[in-house]
Picture 1 (tube, rainbow, N blue to C red):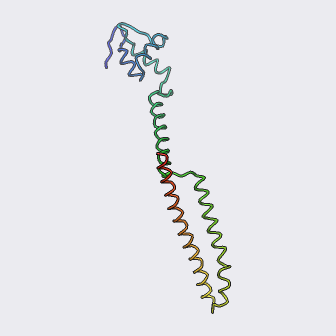
Picture 2 (tube, rainbow, N blue to C red; picture 1 turned 120 degrees about the vertical axis):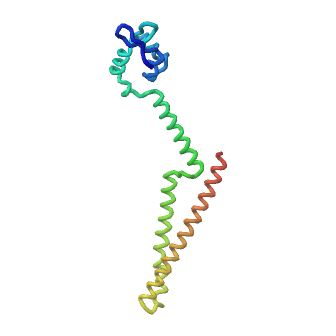
Picture 3 (tube, one colour; picture 1 turned 180 degrees about the horizontal axis):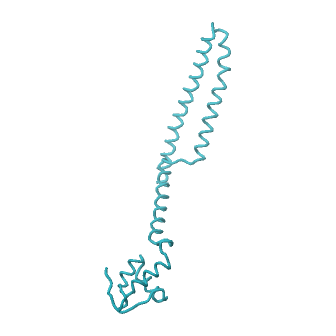
Amino acid sequence: MAGILTSKRTLITQTETAKRLMISRETLLRYIKEGKLNRYEGSKIDEDELREYVKRNNPANAPVLSREKARHEKYKADLAELELKRRRGDLLEVEEIKKDWCRMVTACKSRLLAIPAKVSPQLPGCENAREMERMIKQHINQALEELSNESSDSATNDLERNDQAVGATI
């Protein structure tokens, strides 16, 4: 909006001034009352004084309230989304994952360490090293298969428990 030129001053309305500063008219009136800006003919503001005010106060360095409110609202929405995902079971607690991982590693270690005790009595009946190797691999594969089945059974049980927990909280 173009201002009114009077005696070498370009005057703009308070509404236009508030828009340029991205503030409410009430805030602008407070600035005028505090002497930060001057009013001229018809309660208008001098455009050059407004430019100087902006340079002095450099609003680019100060957070704009609406931007801060939007950032805060986004933060709250993000938190709500995370909570919903947690309830649905899309997110898991770190400690829960650590416990499951430790349980799986321990089970794997136990199964693999048990192989020599299972295989050693059978080795004297083998005719050559190739047959011994085949027997050892067979036991390793069997242990891995059992671990795999336990892992998928455990995952299914975890999902079922989680579904029940979500149903109870909703």
